[in-house]
Length: 149
Image (tube, rainbow, N blue to C red; front, side, top):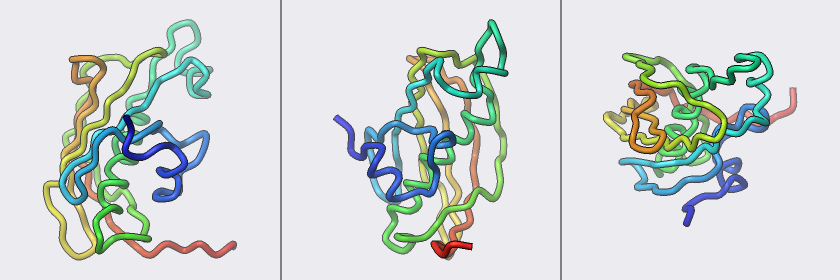
């Protein structure tokens, strides 16, 4: 059972197709941790060029998936509700296994530090029982500008 579905996710973060890389949130402890799911399918646009005949999810998009889950964790904190979380830094990123169509990516995020308009999280992504990626991410939280420009 999911805590947040795709529609509810889109109410929290500005990402939309084709750059929304999360299907649902499995677990959420606001201000502490989140676990979310990304079902990787052959229909993803990036597989057309990465790599034809040998589809591999780009590592940067695994990081983006983790960042989106982290954004939800941060924005579910009362003091950041209604704002936007911007990725400020990626530290210690490691890629341990290839992610392919058909894989179910479990996105794990834990809040390490939060102060004023900043948050630092430890993240890792799993496929089954294998860790495929890990990184520390830093976010800057700012006002959401919803005006048309």
